[in-house]
Image (tube, rainbow, N blue to C red; front, side):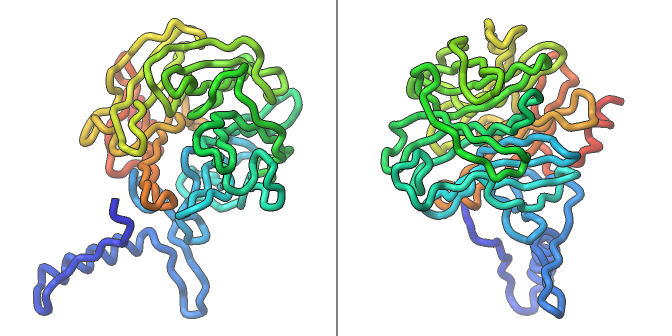
Length: 353
């Protein structure tokens, strides 16, 4: 992926070149924060999604929340994701929004430990795929993430847990571990209708996908931990629709995008059946539009409305990895995702007509 801003070259006196340049300037001005004569930044607001485009926060900075997940609390959405740079990862960022289009940076929800090199989350560790859920009983917010220890590459394969009284944090790191002794890498969390919470995770060098029920306080796995299927899958994104559970996953090809699959089950414990060899449709569907699944978001206040969220990774500059947000379409027996260059939340209203 080219990280630089595209500019169209044109020869002096070329009308077509001038038109092209003006078009690019108009496009860029719709997303880049502007400064007035006093030097005050006036970010442009969004009223639609443009999958794969540059996406700026309300401060005019690129949103930096990769491999993330979203919760709704206090009449706001909170988006958690990996804070990525060109070198070390600093922790987990959080943003807030009331409309899903425009996101306010709330800072680091969980920061790497800068002073204690013996800490599991000492600077130099990797905190990936952060997800947050709320515990109604304890009134606490719990963050789980895939943790790789400092200077150990990807050999640790642990789950990390942190806790907070507020959705935006800051979160206090509690512990890390291998769930029931199993390797734990790409992961997600899911809270069912009865309040039971689950940790879904890639294990056994990503050749196994497992599910563990969490304790009542959501801080640890119980011993009810089961193999869902063995098929070299990662990037699990789980959602529930009409009393069935659906699971989108990715193949394991490193930074190279690949074809997604969709599994379905009547119970979280399975049996899980392949529902679609590829739930993506449209241009570049065979490579999940150049991305990889991370989360499926139920849209608040809209019945049977889900947003498929994926990362379009850029290994040369992970901070510039883009976000793919697309509606899950439910007009057939099998849910699917179709490519849209641009769309709005009113898509879900039109889909039900």
